[in-house]
Amino acid sequence: MDFSLDEMQTIAVDGFQKFLQAEIKPIAEQYRDKYINTELAKEIQAKLAPFGVVNGFLPEELGGFDMDPVTQGMLMHELAKVSPDIAITTLIYFASGKMVAATPEPLRSKYLDKFLSCELIASVAISEPGTGSDISSASCRAKQDGDHFVINGEKMWISSGDYSDFMYVLVNVTEGDETGLAVFLVDRNEHGYETTNIDKTALNSQSTAQVFFDNCRVPKENMVAAPGKGLKMLLTLLQSSRPIVGLMSMGIAQAAFDEALQYALDRSQFGKPIAAKQIVQEKLAEMITKIEAGKLMAYRALDCIAKGKRSDIDAAMAKWYCTDMACDIVDEATKIHGGNGITREFPVEYMARAAKVFRVTEGTNEIQKLMIGRAITGLNAF
Ligand SMILES: Cc1cc2nc3c(=O)[nH]c(=O)nc-3n(C[C@H](O)[C@H](O)[C@H](O)COP(=O)(O)OP(=O)(O)OC[C@H]3O[C@@H](n4cnc5c(N)ncnc54)[C@H](O)[C@@H]3O)c2cc1C
Image 1 (tube, rainbow, N blue to C red):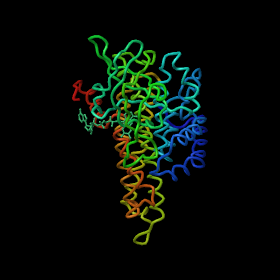
Image 2 (cartoon, rainbow, N blue to C red):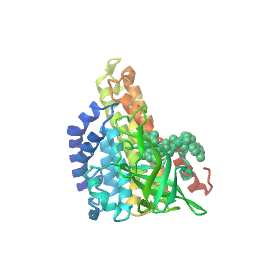
Image 3 (cartoon, helix red, strand yellow):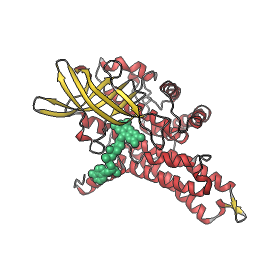
Image 4 (cartoon, rainbow, N blue to C red):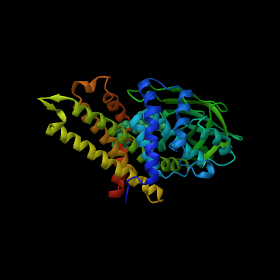
């Protein structure tokens, strides 16, 4: 396997890096720890879209570029280096774009064009206040009432939730004696749901929201996955986004490494730059090695996805390794900054807060390890 950039990827990544430095970095700096409102969030995603990072993975017949998963991952890595917050909104475009692609016609056509132009934002709502890792126990319910289903319940931690115009929602549906998890496309204006943002320790430039469904009537045609099929649909989705989350974390780690390297070269103690000290070099060497290892792991998982091979375990390995290592790397970067590392003046402080979040999203790292453990032992330890 060769994961060095090919000619097309080099052009894509180089052009994207220049754009990010010129257009996105100033916004990211201005909005660190400040909320980017819906209008600006859509504007930013519309600017990113021509590079393929937002929905280029979609097939050409649906308006995408047929971009391969490895290139998509490389672009997400670059974006997260500059802004993990904006990258999350883009990641949710990726996740909800997969759901849009899987939405049956004519419902899909109703949303596709405005979704592609970033006039609409969608979310994917699985987690609930009482349902986190055990997503099969969703308590949000839908009851059939003639040609409609009536949804009641809450969702929690929903990325882009407050921005969203529509949402793919995992709900428990009862049909006769049978209950099963289904997915509905719920439209904020047509069917009605309420959202409220959650204040976090980091990544507050983007929306993470609690969502409330109160007798929300949705036509039966909006059922995107039938009862019993919803969980599989969303687990497949998570499998494809986990390596990307890994690469995003490695983006934060790379940005922290770059800051630490420059700081170590600039800062002198005991008559020499601290970069000339063996222990500082050891830290830098370990940091960059972990970044390279993490990226390769994530590329391998994405390559499996591209080739249609089994990828769940590779994806789980990449997700936990990259997101845990990112925390270690950013921690070392803050140590290299000495006292400055814990001031808001230096970006490593923010990176340390941001890196932690990715250990939780897309399934916690403990859950990833349980999946790997089950695969290697044949025993379920959940
Ligand atoms: C910023 C952010 C964005 C998010 N975006 C979305 C989104 O867009 N859509 C969405 O649906 N969800 C989203 N989530 C939710 C996320 O997927 C959940 O937070 C995650 O799955 C964990 O659920 P929980 O927080 O309820 O923790 P819990 O499941 O309650 O877990 C608590 C702790 O117990 C551990 N644990 C749980 N079960 C086991 C077990 N069997 N064995 C050992 N340890 C276990 C966990 O690893 C964790 O350490 C987001 C979360 C965050 C923080």
